[in-house]
Length: 99
Image (tube, rainbow, N blue to C red; front, side, top):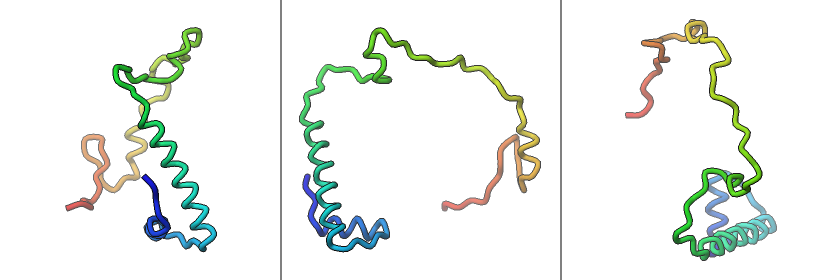
């Protein structure tokens, strides 16, 4: 995939950016080099390779240092919801914004 200067102008417009021609040309080079890297990664055959949960697990001598999932703070839901205009069953009620 290769972008054109028209694509860069459209992206800049969508992002509400005003690029001078020099910036636009530089951005075109940067974006196209990024897409070149993506195409190289897509070309790698990953058939039969299971995804990793975390890249550190490939290092056998490194153990993930994860803390125990324990409650460390008191429940302050009621105190936090005192200033809310509307609460029902422990949930904040907000106006509907999507039809």
